[in-house]
Length: 316
Image 1 (cartoon, one colour):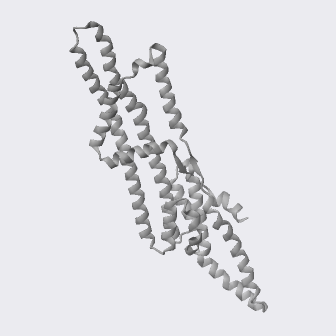
Image 2 (cartoon, helix red, strand yellow; image 1 turned 30 degrees about the vertical axis):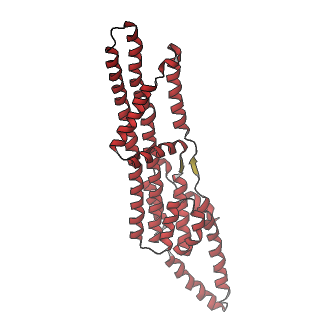
Image 3 (tube, one colour; image 1 turned 60 degrees about the vertical axis):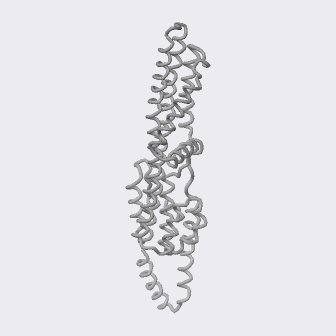
């Protein structure tokens, strides 16, 4: 895109030379060049806003499910009758032990950390990310990729974007940039996938541990058939482990696993947009082509029309 700009410059110089006033021509060219760069230079650092905070969908859903269960218990009986520490120990301890045996201590710890993180989930708006990438591409097209070095302090809030722009300013080949960033995206997605797998496994184990606890309780109950008055309470306690396992697996762990998977998809989308933008800028491609590449990745409802709707106002 620098070629049309360079080819236009000699024409103006020759026209000025024929009028005998060569000096004003560069001055008239310098003013337009400085004005457009001011907006793109300041815009990329503040064009993306975080969405989220407390994940109300998760919190409200879990709270509503718990409220429905507690209401059903208190309506037909006593809430205290559903509290049994040995049953809780079998379900919680057994689920954690079997899940850890299926993976590793590190994987389980990371999974629980990611599960807690989705409750306070913050993600970048894909539309804002795409717009930010186009602003960076516009700035690089006007003044060269090296000018992005001045924007690095503004981009420290998004580490992946900061690394992407740093690779551009260091002059790495586009193919090398693509390999490095794509590898990081895949590694991050793999980590989130393992965390979701841990939670999925735990959601499968919890009901099974509840069934095991029930069988243990039934065996103990059958051993005391000589006392008929103890059969009813013993049966109730035996069934509590199944209740605990079903609630833990289907009401808590399975939704958290789904949330971790969704969070991983959103994070991968944002990083893919940054990767596409970094490679396109390094190749010095037309920003309009970059917009088409970004829209090919974005969901239909998130696609942008920057050059058709927003770019004229930016340049105004």
